[in-house]
Length: 189
Image 1 (cartoon, rainbow, N blue to C red):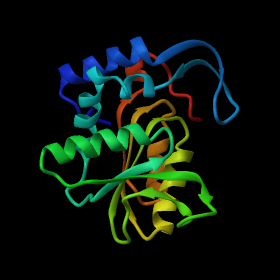
Image 2: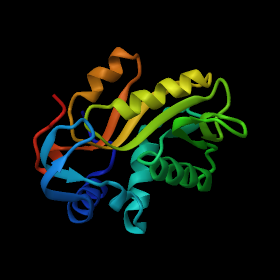
Image 3: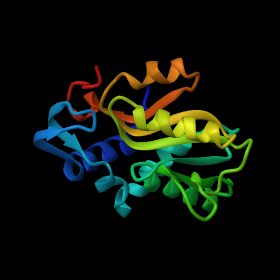
């Protein structure tokens, strides 16, 4: 998989992730598996010096047909909203939304919060993926809301198995960086 960022921006984002987001120790992942490292990409995505690199990376792989960006809250939220904001500043309309973990049972109800309309061509995003379950859950929620997922994108792919899972769903996948880019083996198997 080629990297969407220019080499200097890629290296700056890689270093930022290593300094602010990667932690070493004993961790239990969402899957219940143990790992000697953990990455909290929000520690990078939510810092001003890295926001533009993240948005530029996502925008560089964004299909022309995309009209909205979002994903499962919380991991997707900063990526989606930063990208939509930068896109708007550059004259490219891109709606943003969040997918709730559970459907709201009051007000308008549903799982989608924000701007997503039936027929929207959607980029589903996440900060970090290992197995891709959050991305795929969000893509299914988008389909349930009559949107069309056209791309899955993550800031970091730590698992190495998401591309195949996404292909099985008929949706391309891109990552700005991978576990090997950060000096680690993939852990998604």
